[in-house]
Length: 81
Image 1 (cartoon, one colour):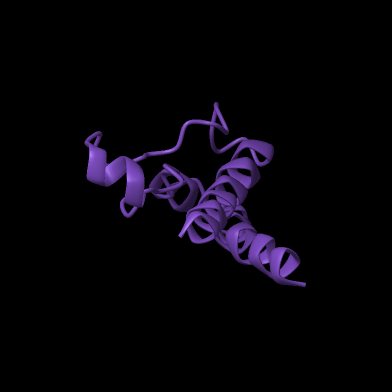
Image 2 (tube, rainbow, N blue to C red; image 1 turned 120 degrees about the vertical axis):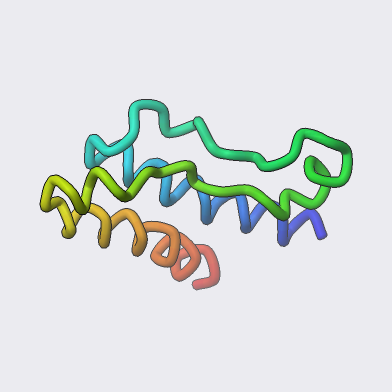
């Protein structure tokens, strides 16, 4: 269970750091951790990268949105290799 939660954290931080590198997010550590109750904190079931993709699409930065989305997947490829 701990391994799965750690994997989830790496996945979401990969999205978040990619957004930070591409200037789509100010703080790469600012994830949305979901409900702040015991169950939510233990399960991390509602964790999210907390990236707002709407402005990227509105400003025509579709490539940046795509790279951010792929960032989490690429972290999992390297993690499982």
